[in-house]
Image 1 (cartoon, rainbow, N blue to C red):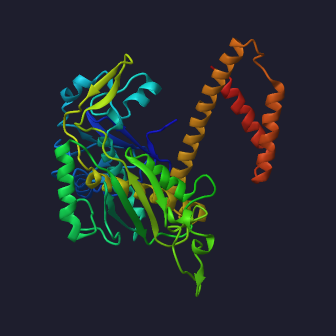
Image 2: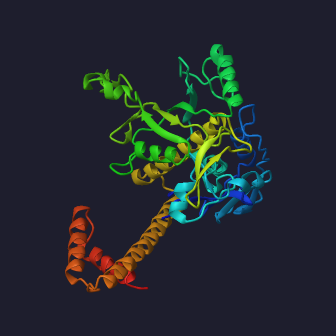
Image 3: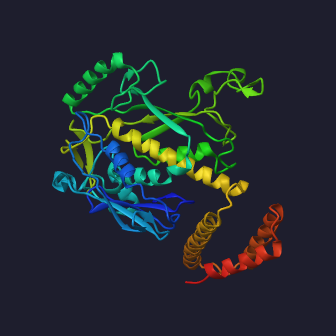
Length: 431
């Protein structure tokens, strides 16, 4: 499973670790002859790497390095690879914890999965990897046109803002100038304790086209949720009126019509998984950064308890650096949905775009064949270990019958689909 792929339509894959040589991304087949937005990308990266009294003191220049796919300032249509080298990693800060599973981090769960983990700053579980997302979003946002995204912090720790209508002119996007000094004082107290804070982000996007999203497993709300949960510290998402939808009766939750228009937006601009043209609205629950200097109970690789205090350079509150990442993931998700809608509605008469989408689908088909063969090999091993017959003709006949029935239901020729399944079975049976 290609879990480091950001977008199926655009073919964006990210790579790199917090203390590795570089963070980067690869776009396998970008549109040719487009101006490469170097200046805009640098500005976006600077926003993500915000520095302040409550952020990590790690200072990275985040200079773009183009390895392929750009010539004389324009994309060539060949694989586009961009990296940002890590220049200020201090891996020695983590040497004392190399055999310890830190509380709240991915160390333990990733070790259970892979039997290895990169203890240097969390490896790929670090927020450092998010800069590749910001680069990817900037390269895809030409599809967004008039869409405007606004993000505000409505709560940080226990401090709540009374309004979420407009982001304040401050690093935290705190909407209330009057209570901003109180927020800074609060953060100073948490910093002095060696602790950290999360919060709640209010996200809204205007000028959203209607019809984005595809029932039932590619709903816009589901894909946005997946995009947001791919960010390490996001722990919850609530669309529209959020928890109030669970408290109110249906008469107060339904978006009714008046004079041919929707009179309310309780569901946040998505109904039935498809955008309805209203503003897209949701809230994100953000947990605090896990690296704190307060002593905590941990576990080492030998299964022995350890009491640790994490030193090094860490955020007190990472919301200023998280906000550009949230915006980037929403931009990528919306760009994907817009591009797909253009293709299925026939709005795009651009032959290279059609071919690019077909190439992506073919690539997915080949990947699925590989995954099926891997599972079949495990089935063979299971049958050998349990003295079961390697062949099951009845099972194969049932597979073919189901394939023909499914084909009929979606207006595909059943005989050709069965021929395809037979080839699939032959591929899966090869070693």
